[in-house]
Image (cartoon, rainbow, N blue to C red):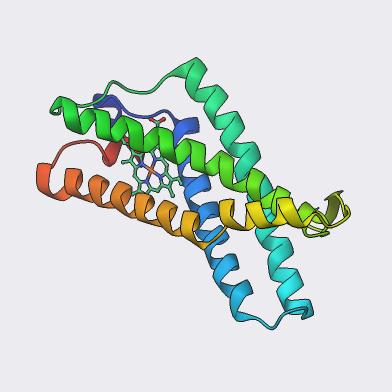
Length: 178
Ligand code: HEM
């Protein structure tokens, strides 16, 4: 704690947003992988899909609040680094923010276009609407394996960068987010 005070750290809300959204993203991937392993039209598969949707709604709401908070409160000054690395880190963070907003939206559109109801932890939120094959086809790409895997690769680079700062550069990058 004393050490956190002595470094320019992310504030408590920023850290809470970061780690709760990171945990929810892990849940999004786990529920997606579990769902695809389950039998089509089974109640288990519907339950896991409903959980996936609920987590997605939560990620979307929390990210919106987080972005507003971030724009109003800012973040600690970046640690000294070559310009290219600083630009890469900034672009990576913007891409992570955009992805955490884009995927829930395309997921919701995919569910609605497929004639499914969107639930938020048991509470019916929207739908069901009539099936729309054109929107369904588009959202199966925009909310599909390719983009999910690209995001996973981006998260992997983000985590490796944090570990590299901590263990190789031995600076405060990771410590100011925990
Ligand atoms: C074990 C997993 C993770 C670790 C160790 C980690 C670590 C970090 C660290 C150390 C920072 C601060 C970087 C800096 O000060 O320049 C950061 C920022 C950030 N992280 Fe992560 N992260 C993880 C997972 C995630 C996930 C899953 C997401 C979203 C999908 C995410 C999104 C972000 C964003 C958007 C920022 C920028 C915050 C800002 O300055 O506005 N992180 N992360």
